[in-house]
Image 1 (tube, rainbow, N blue to C red):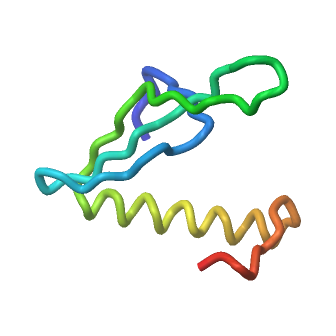
Image 2 (cartoon, rainbow, N blue to C red):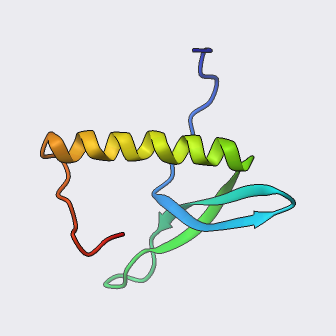
Length: 81
């Protein structure tokens, strides 16, 4: 694996688009708002990849989710998927 040159932190993915033959994921960070209100998400970086790369990334994430569920770090939500 190549040396990692830069790290990007995101609290999550805001939107996912398919445009120009590419998958576009908008990464968001939570920003404080008025006291007592929920933080607002703000897009800060867009990750763009071809569909095959997106599918490969999805499969890798699913494998990690399965391992985290098996280890008890996450609980399986039967209402999802």
